[in-house]
Amino acid sequence: MPATDQHLSIPVGDTVVSAIYARPDNPAGPVATVAVAHGAGAGMEHPFLRGFTDALNELGLATLRFNFPYREAGRRFPDRPPLAIATWRAVMDTAAEQATVHGDTGTVWACGKSFGGRMASMAVAEGMPAAGLIYLGYPLHPPGKPEKLRDEHLYGLTTPMLFLQGSRDTFATAALLEDVVARIGPTAVLQWVDGGDHSFAVAGAKRPADQVGASVAAPVADFIKSRG
Image (cartoon, rainbow, N blue to C red; front, side, top):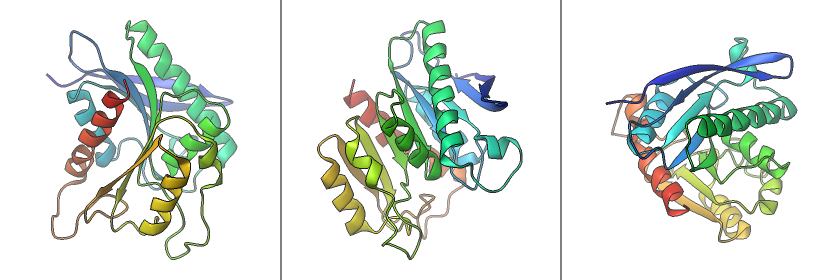
């Protein structure tokens, strides 16, 4: 039986964002709770995120996916980091509350697609508690501009981190990302999705976005479970 969605409203300063919480149909409870943020160009209802979180639920993890304020308001341009970080803090507090309400003993992780993952890492760098970080296509630099790295805050992080990256992702030159992950140290792991672009679509293997999202859930679940 698939997990049942619970629709939530999360206050963030003077605004409120929507979120969807789902738990696996597992008498033992979820292994962990994963808060999942969307990328810059799509909200929490994007089929990729729906497929990803559904698959995580089937693999025994609870999920809480949410909108940033700009998407909630129907705006195109992402929130500035202070507001995005405040949103992440509120979401992680809510994820922890849901775990407590349901008597779950598992950890709470922060996961994000592109912009959402980068904002999660910045929030943790500023002190937000998280058992670990999952990046679904970390935007290391703008396409074609490898000199403009977004990496400085990463080197102070000590939480487990999984960089799940398409090998054709123009937002992260392979050699540069490999160097960044190596410099972070043993807490960071880089896993390539062969042939994947920034959305993990593989050339010559056209699939619906929900299936693409579901296809990257297993390595994420394995990483979280391996870290207890």
